[in-house]
Amino acid sequence: MEISFEGKRALVTGASRGIGRAIVGQLAKCGAQVVAVGRSKADLEALKAETGVETLILDISDWDKTEKVLSQLDSIDLLVNNAGEGMIKPLIDLEEGDIDRIFSLNLKGLINVTRLIAKNMIRKKSGAIVNISSQASLAGLLNHTVYSASKGGVDAFTRACALELGPHNIRVNSVNPTVIMTEMGRKWWSEPSRAGTMLHKIPLGRFGEVQEVVDAVLFLLSDKAAMITGTCLPIDGGFVSS
Image 1 (cartoon, rainbow, N blue to C red):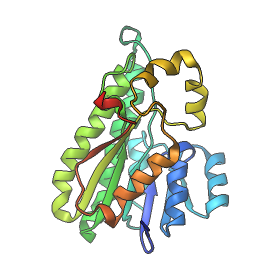
Image 2 (image 1 turned 180 degrees about the vertical axis):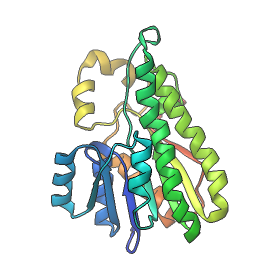
Image 3 (image 1 turned 90 degrees about the horizontal axis):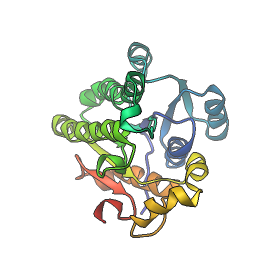
């Protein structure tokens, strides 16, 4: 199934590395003009040299700076809200700063970016948005209370946003991956004592690969998914069904 984004302009947050970087690369290969947003200047410069995409150094948890920067962009047809941060910490050890940091990036920043980009989508009566959520929004994970709550908010926002933007021909979906074997994922989950319990709950018996998330995101952004909106799609090997 061929997917082309020729003539489309896409914005991807959290594009410095991992899943976001891979999404940028694949969108560019499919013909999209891509704006890659991230916090790491060095990583974005390397991405630009590799793919030729436009880059923006921006911390989306800064509400005012994000509004100033994104309001100056030309209209965007495709948005991938990938920026986010994980946290594994027991509930009783949480501090206010932990909650503020995770929510300001994972949820508040995502909402801000979406509202800014959606303005032009509404004017054009066209657009597709994919939010990167997590299986942590769909199943309880030990010591993930704040992270799970932030991603639960992403899913709720996805559904409500799909309802609000649907009449403007704008689709909004999320993908909810299990552990994905990014560079960081391989380092953390290569330890059998950590991986064992999680793998035991995955019927397919393995963690996900980056390309498996990328493929789902591109499908949901494309016209192949023209009748799909308001969906939270697990990419989890069956974790939430077990």
